Length: 212
Image (cartoon, rainbow, N blue to C red):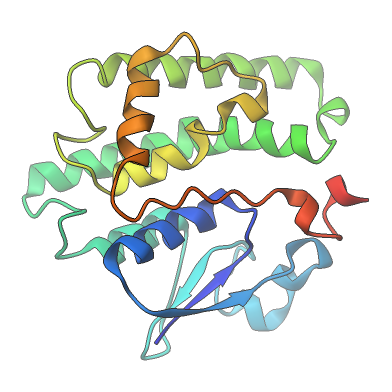
């Protein structure tokens, strides 16, 4: 059986949980207490050298890290990843966009905000992140004006990856109201069979900064 190393408030973890739900794949969960330092322990670093979640252990003991790489592996041969070279490349394009312009920007702002770290960050850096986050939302809104889903006319892992943090942009202080096409896409994603609407706040973890 697959083993998912996870931390419930992690939106990167949500991505993998969502695809596993769509694919109806059985798996067991091993929680990683990030704020207690479990991610830095030698046993976990052998699974994921960066010490972050999620990570996936396959039935044969091999491991994968990085949420979007895990999505691509699990989606192989399924409707959630195109079979043609161009279609797969377009998915890769948007997975890269998600990591560079959404997760590292909106995700960081959200984390800083919800864990009380925002006032400790240089104001210039915060403003830079906010401007970059708004640019990312505007790009997605413009792209989604011409098609129902991010990489094609069909729902897939690019949508799962991008939905994880864009749906929570307002937690980072970024308004979604101006982006009608983006909000309509979110509604289409939420309407997918098996959609996981769950959200786990950092406050469920007594070791998280927001809980102290």
